[in-house]
Image 1 (cartoon, rainbow, N blue to C red):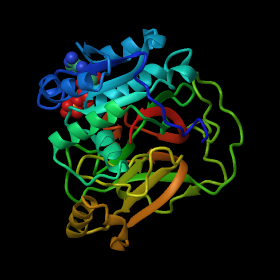
Image 2 (image 1 turned 180 degrees about the horizontal axis):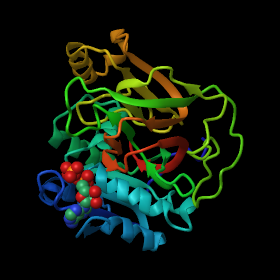
Image 3 (image 1 turned 90 degrees about the vertical axis):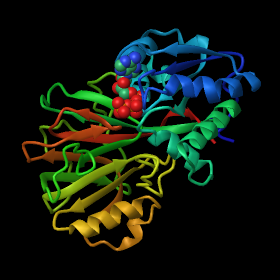
Image 4 (image 1 turned 30 degrees about the vertical axis):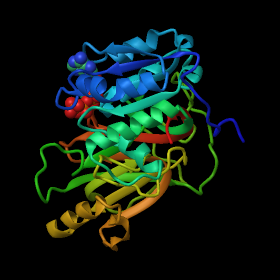
Length: 343
Ligand SMILES: Nc1ncnc2c1ncn2[C@@H]1O[C@H](COP(=O)(O)OP(=O)(O)OP(=O)(O)O)[C@@H](O)[C@H]1O
């Protein structure tokens, strides 16, 4: 068994740092933890230290500075937002390469629990209620088996010479799905381009930023490389790039995605779709059948990297459900770079 895909117990001899955001979801994360998970961990003999986050970015700063040799795993009991902080805190460290090897775990305690829903799905189980999802993820944590997980490196660029880089474990979204102030039949204008999976290997190492070099990306103020596909349409309803299966517990958006397939599952919907057809797609997404719907406005393709340059002056872009700076954005996947307690 190749060590990258092997699973091993993570919670012995080191303790698990269990980060809880007391405000996440309906403010019930802590009581859900003490009510459901704590006893499971104690019975399974998993030593853990509870850290209650006090403010935004607390977890990010904490893992940026932590002595990671003390911890067998970093587990988040919250929504996806707190894990986003932890992943980015680890990737901001000078020793990011080793730091991101720290096994991560997720217990759904927030309102957006997409990664928890994804790992529950990968375990082969049927969809369940929120409380059952928590118990399911609690069991996975007690088993403590680790798998590789993809991350995407996301560049946001109002200043192309000095882009902001974020690391994302879930999704990059624009348009209908990301826009909190959704106007029906709104069209989002922009240019979308991507590198198809079967194109060439990395060309050059763009190593100006700390962290892993994004060898598939050129600076945002330069045109995309010639082997990228530029989507001919410029009017969209939504663009959704996923690296895991679920966008939310009931949104099975990328049915073919697995934890470490090294792919970005790109879905976009062209303008001109009727409201009814759009509604039908979202309803089908609950069961993951939307891609088999033969909707002429929907395009699904697997890519390694993508770029989006919105022309519409207003809009919302989210990374892992977090609203980020609106403007040009590009991303490339780093296959299996992180490790997650799963299965
Ligand atoms: N103690 C805290 N007080 C305020 N914000 C916090 C605290 N701890 C963490 N946060 C922030 O709260 C945000 C939301 O957390 P998270 O996504 O985990 O929960 P959620 O319930 O799914 O969130 P939301 O419903 O707000 O999207 C995160 O961005 C995190 O930075």
